[in-house]
Length: 485
Image (cartoon, rainbow, N blue to C red; front, top):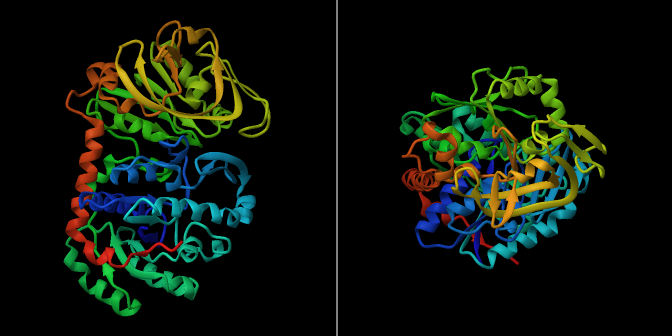
């Protein structure tokens, strides 16, 4: 059985996911078998697992860091927001229901046995389990019925490292304050604090570290300096979209920021290209007239996001862009939007009904309860280049433009291309990570030197070396305890 250690944060976005990913690679480099685990995640960035389900993208990255295949047990409960007050609830990789926030918070404690079963499944085949909490550990208003933070830690008897982000300020108060406000039995599980995202000379925090150790009676790890190369790793959630636009290349890609944008890490390889400028178009802003490509991304609620697209006037901009000779690509939900209609007779994503699409592809989509979850190896028809992607969608798309497929999976057509060749749709997420395909698609704008997947490995190795340098790994691992079954 494994030893386990849990990493909680004083707030969201303090770097829990990256710390766990880096430590997974550290332990793997040491020849140990390590697995990541996150009891409950909330994200529309998801990945398909080897056992045919889906988990949060961050846990898939952590599994990659651990040099293990991603499994549904690594993230047994995934919440995928469908609106302001509700989410699709995915349990052990499969959609179970769509619930309002109030319904979920009322009923979530019932999922704890399944969370613990997944945790114990992983523990049977690992030396270490590194557990990531969710959001802030000090949200005492959410403590009753909790399965993501102390509710899980208490049930599984897992010790906790509390991470604080020094860059946002107030890190000493946030750590001391967390210990002060949580239940004493929860606080007793906290074995140490860890200071993350430090800028400048780490020696300047020595007195702060000493104060924390005196005040809390717990060891303080770090500070861990900011790791700039983390920007090249897939982001976990939509917080990254606030500063996502970038690049100064001559090929301009415009991406409307849909309210329920999903799997936006599809864009990461494009943003990494030196010859590309990627603009994430914010609500209220027009789609730039000089864009070469408008890319409609995935969506967790396609009809609702299509309505938001129209409310922003982006439908007019996209149609004008196409009339002027520009290219349009839709991925997953974006592909569905490009068709004539999107029907949801069973109310899968909201109220039953049918929405008119943009009409740029001669196809129609009918949403259905069954979610398609699988990885694919395909051939891009126009270039003959191979690509690997994954399907993660609900619905079937049919129509005349399917006779001109975007790609082929074996002998089966995948996606659709319009008669003029400038409008394309595909259900394949992750397609731009394939270097050959990306170069063929972008033409002169692509760099022959960019190896995207190899770059991810380089960043993970760099992150591991960074943590080895700034943390006492042996002392940290000594805090882990044997998993109890």
